[in-house]
Length: 265
Image 1: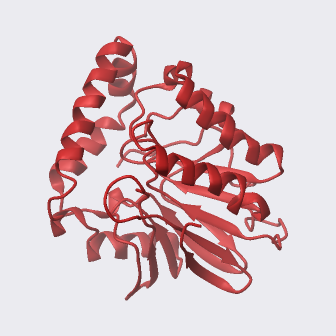
Image 2 (image 1 turned 60 degrees about the vertical axis):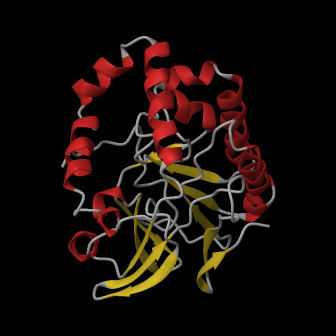
């Protein structure tokens, strides 16, 4: 698979790595918020999380799919996107580190956005040490190895040349394409999710082996749970949706007492 490089160094910036002392404040993990103007209740919950829930955190880790789609950093010209970037930047202003990982919907998040949000880009996968626990973090789409069609697309979409060609296309064309794909995704929201799109034992075992960690945190599948795997404990983050049907959302808190799944306020 494509070896992704960080936009700037993160190895020394992640709490618990190297010789940095552990912070007493917790680390918070979330993913799959899918921000867009079409989901105002979800956006409001995210704003509350950043302003209130995250206020006492040492670091916030967003493990992919922060936005419903991202077609290039020129999206920052849109008022909604600029507002979300400014909101995220308040974390840095309060001394809270923000780490953002690419997801399958927003893998084109680039340097301009990271700077506007005050964020550090986190490679996928990555390993941190939090309160003495070595943790492998990932978005999760790489673990869905049974979906071979998607894995082929993923490899192509992460190709730098393909990305350059796409980003060079007119903004209106990119936006129309993304909206079309979003509409198809919305159409399939109520259909049962095939096991083909879930992680596989092979993918999970490979990440445990690569990371030499006994704990894993990922999102993507929208199936929040705590799984006991042969290689260790696997936590799955929930997606956020407060605008369609049953309320969904939440995050993980990692502190000196361990790892806990917490609901939204």
